[in-house]
Length: 574
Image 1 (cartoon, helix red, strand yellow):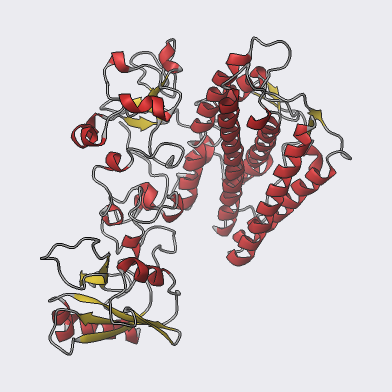
Image 2 (image 1 turned 30 degrees about the vertical axis):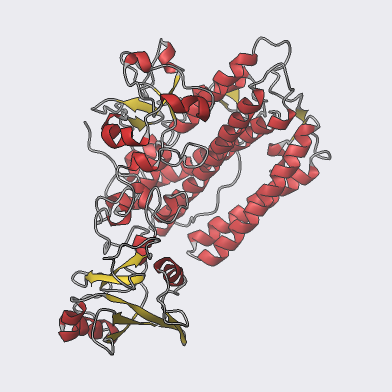
């Protein structure tokens, strides 16, 4: 098996053992205890050299329980190798903290129960106690920690609650920790596994009743079974019903006889699923899932042929500017047109097709995710370009300018003309499946970028970004296949598929508002990309906010037009 290639910088960080989902922008937003990470564990290291724990008072404490245990408790000193406290630092506050930790005060902090006593920043002191002297609950104080500003002096006091009266108090001054480095990875002060140590074990138990309707991030719900024999290049089963039979990942019967189609509802699936106590005993029986498919004990990824590197950076830049980035935008616009060519679930006729409402709900969600994915690829392609410019690799006399135009002229890909805007019928879905198929023309479009950026002359982060683009298309392929499979049930109806609107491409006058929103979105993204290339992040964020507002107006306009049978001529916006 080839050596795994990390897809983000967190996977390469010194804090080995933290999963990729521990990257701050990768979680679904749950905080405590969390299903991917526990955010409280980030703030456990909010102050350099110290490790705290958020303590919540028990609802029904035992007689032998410690008194006054709620709050932010000091676990231990951890100042050795703390990146905020280098021994040779010339900053007075760093040397003062190191002297405190290595002296008599540090010895005192290593004994007894020490808690956060107060926090002070910007002249405002927050006590950790209510007016009657009762300690605040740890999760309330944790919210205060979340509000601490970066790069502003911070003072804290610790009190020994089990010490003699008057209780010993230690005051410390420093700064709040940044939880990611300048490269965007988790700070190396966090130990391996520290961000997930307070979560459920085994994690499958915690996920037991969290289906895809809520926790879709890394909880398998409905999966495709193992190929068990011949398979496609991407590992999907071929030639059998296994290729299209969705299985319940939590099914109790793991034998071949149990590989039957998952029921249509959670209520129907529940009796045949592993229960909580069973998961505690059989969690290891649940299969790993890669690309939506269960795999066996040994995962053997498909061998991807090595691409030929570009002759030089200029050749790669030309390809990104003239073909790859425009292709991403072109496909995003085609997929959006296909999205609005479908009926909304509310428009599904009742009675004749009882499953159409659910099919349209799923299909619209999948196509939306695919279109968003192509827009993300467009952003990443631009990031490759501005990263090459920042590294001084652009041809002499040239600099990065945002690429936000679709492909020009007639070009055929996968049997579909990319300058057209087709409705999402079966023939169009077949073309999109061919386009997005693993090892197909689009899937390997960035292969030469990966091969080039892997060379030592190029920044490592650009190589990682190219790998991420190159390997991100598998989900598009799977989702298009899933949409086509659901639409096949309506193929016998006369005329256009019943799931589709009777839609034509509208005129410029009919679609004026939608085209204006498209132009505004493009202009805002162009401004955002240019600002990011200059490392001006606040203007970039402001422009992104404008782009999102324009996208929302476009969605509303396109949906209203689609209900009238009018499609947005997206390419007319350029």
